[in-house]
Structure formats: C-alpha cells, structure tokens
Amino acid sequence: MAYATDYTTLLTGSYWSGAEIAAKLVFVTYSFDTTAPASDAGHLAPSALATFTAYTAAQQAQARQALAEWSSASTVAGGGSGIVFLEVPSGQGDINFASYDFTSDPNARYSGGEGYYPWGNWNYSTGQPGSIHFGADLPGAGNILMNTAFETGGLFSYATVLHEIGHALGLKHPTDAWTNDVPGYIDVVHNQWDPNITYDPNFSIMSAGATSLTDLTGADYQAIQSIYGTPSMAANADKSWSWDAGTNTLTQVLKGGGQTVRGVSTSNLITGGTGADAIYAIGAGTNTVWGRGGADTLVGGSGVSYLDGGAGADTINGWFGASWASYQDAAAGVVASLANPSLNTGDAAGDSYLHIGRLLGSKFAEGLTGDGAGDVIEGAGGADLLAGGAGNTIFVYAAIGDSAAAAPDTIADFHSGDLIDLSAIDANPKKAGFQSFSFGTQTGKAGDLVATYDAVHDRTVVDLYNKKAAAPQGTIWLAGNHALTAADFILTGGARAPAPAGFASAMASFGAGAAESLYAGAEPWSAPRFSLSAPRTQLV
Image (tube, rainbow, N blue to C red; front, side, top):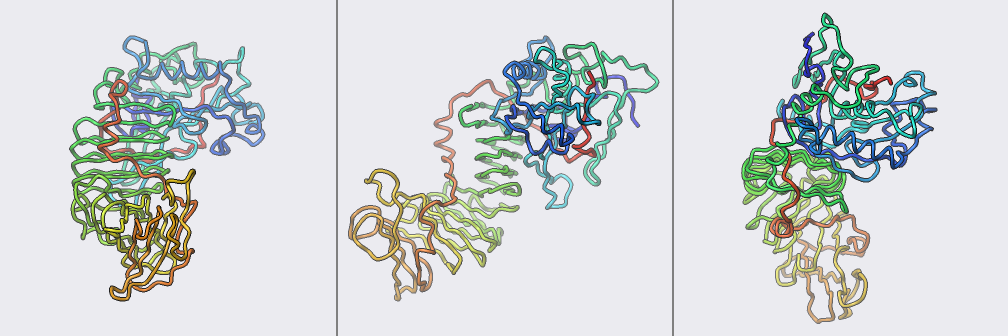
C-alpha cells in the first residue's frame, strides 16, 4: 500500500478524460433527471427508489454553483480546473442529478448523497494493450443521488453536493485504499492517507464523514487540476469550439495533430488536426468526425456516427453504435472494401474497420464493398460500383442525382433480401409535401419507379422519374435479370439518418466559436477495479 499526506490521496486514476492521465482538459455534460433513471436501480433499495424527486429550480442553481467551483468557470484565485461543463436535457449527461429519500434503505439512510465514478465501455477486440477504445459511459457512471431526508430549507448541504460531484469527476476519500487494476493493461496502486499521521477532516471536501468545510480546499484544487488541467489551459488546446444548446451539439476544431479527444454524451462535430489523432465521439445523438491527415483512430458513439478519416491509414471503429465509414470528402473516388481492406485505394488506402457495417461514398465514382454481414451502403454521387456480399444489404440513395440516368450506379450482386432505399428522395418536388415513388409501369408522370431487363447487357434497369418526362432522371443498374417487386424497395419510412454536411461546407458555416478549449493527451483509460454498486458517500 502507498501512503501520502497530500492531494494524491484523492486520485483514483479513473476520469472522464482517460485512465492514469494528467492535466488533460475535457468537456463534461450534466443534466437534471425528470424521472428516475433505470441505472439507479442498483444503487438504492426499491422502496427508496420509489421516492424519486426531480430537482427544484433552487436545487438546480445550487448544483450549477457547485459545478462552477470545480470547473474552468471558477472565480477562486488559483482554483477551478480545465473542465468545461455543458448542461443537456434530462438523462443525457455524463453526470446526472436525481434525489430520493434514502430513509427506507438501511445501507444508505445516513448518507447525504451518493456519487459514482466515471468509467466507460471498452473495446477489447484487438486484444492488445494500447488499443482499448473509449466508448459511451456505462449506465450509472457519473450519477449523483442526493438524500432528500437531509434537505434544509429546500436545499441539500452544499458541502455534500461538492463532495458527490468530486466523486463523479473521479476523486475518492483520502483515507480510502485504491487500486486501479485491469490485468495486462493497468495496475496502479493509488495513495492512501498515511495512517500514522492524524487526518484532519478539513483537509479536503472529499473527506469521509462530517466536515466543517463549505467550499473546496487547496488540496481539492490541486487534485482536480492534476487531472483536468487549469482554467488557463482551457484556452489553448482547440483551434476553436462552440456549443449549440438547441441541438446539444459540440463543435470542435483541433489544433495541430496527435491529439486524443473525447466528445460529449449528446452530439459532436469534431475536426482533427493534420497529424494522427484519436477521436472518441461517444455521443448518443449524431456524431460527425473528420480526421483529416495522419493515421487517425476514429471511434463512433452509441448513436449514429459518420467517421471520415481523410488521408492516411485510419482505424474506423463502430463498436458502440451505428457508425458509417465515410469518404464523403475524398478528393477523388476511392475503393473501400469492408471484406478486404487491403484492396482499398485513395483516401481509403490503409484503412481498417472494427464493427463497421455502413459505407458512405463521395461525389466521385468509386467501388464500395460490404462484408456480407448485412451492410448499409450509400454511394452518393458518381457512377459507383456497389456490392454487399452474402448478407442482406440496403443500398441507400439520398438524392436522385446519386445515380443519375447519365451515370448510373451498378449493384453487382443484388439478391433476394437486399433492398434499395429510395425513401429520402422526393418523387415530385413540384408538389407540396413529400412524395414517395410508386413501383410499377411507366405512366410518364413524376413518381414512377420502373424496372426492366436489358438482355444485351444482362442487367436489370431501375428507372426513377421525379418529373413528367419521357426519359428518367435517375437510373440504377443491377447485374443480371431480377424480377423486382415493390418489396425490393424502401419507399417510405427508411431508417437512413441524414448524411452530414461535407467538411468544407461545415467549416464554412462554423464561426469562431467560444473560448478555445479541450485537451491533447495519451491513451484513454481502462475500467478500474471497483463496482458501481459501491457508492462513495459523505455523511452529513
């Protein structure tokens, strides 16, 4: 066991920015639950869980004040940290606040609150140290539960609120023993207060049990700054960033290259530097990441993610959600094969894929091939050659020009079970509202969707009409003779998420943003040896 009598006795090694890291700035979202989250079920007895109460306006204001003490917004000289807190809707935060009456729970009735450490899902698919990838945080990580039995005048003890936030940021009681241990990856014994030295409960707001403190101490600031950096550092890591509170989207443009960046829990637009970046877009909403130059590692979130590595041999990881390997901004057509990436060319050359089943092409002609596991392939513009493999593939068309009559796409291996998704195309733009195609015979009207067989070239020709004309405006070729029916198409209600704006258009519309911040850093962290069911509480 390692002993000390300073701020290092507060450290766990498990933080929002990674494991066993130092001075790495980060954005952390928070919310106030309006209903009891399912992830709290393992933290309190059912009878206590039934007493859920949403925070009042006054309690929310108190929590925001406490967050500010820990953050880059701190007004204390020498205080604060490099954390930027962003408020999001109920249940969508890294840190989520809820309150209950703990009285009926014999294991928690005397606690003023419970705060749970940050940790996340990890991808062990490569089985190699240094290749663990950060994903969405595990349910319950970062949750803060306050005990309404200890309310005074409608407010919780301010010291307890500060204390539980400290746990949610990765700090422990100074007197706790702690080992951050994942065999083969991390094995770090953290300092515990020296039992031969009398402990002063006013040393830190993180002291277990009662304390007379009402604000953070110097030791607390030293600890949090050692993890997340100082407020002054928050202005020097990003080229620019901005927060859209309407869509809960964080936009970041990174400086230089070689950075390791964690996105926010909602939606992200992240542009890497010119070097090899590691970008973890953990959001449950829509995430768009441009790696740009260098051999980047791009990891999608638990929502829908578009991962565009740009030039360089990139690792595209879709382990945690519906992630697209995107080549939308390629300067020329690419060959991209999920089945055999060694065939890749252009911006896709050298790229590797982990749990990727969605490919998005560029405005140029290219070859996109799935891995036969039920992929979604969107060629976008150009005369593309597409193949899905043995599984049931969905071939997506977002605009009629994506397979223009003058330059049709070819689907090389269409078979029963495959689908052609036209649900995003308005079949009659001149008519009010959105119109879907109607499969059948040609009538010469907008909305016609007609399939015929071209015996000379042994291909099935699918023609699309979105205006009254003798010739089609869109055409898709299917190799071979297929007796298509309406069941081979998705004409309404397709599951396709809107493709992101390209890098150039996104950056053209992105302003200077707010004060610059975030972090550059090392390999993210592995799950430490502890249980989310073991709360870290302060008795007040």
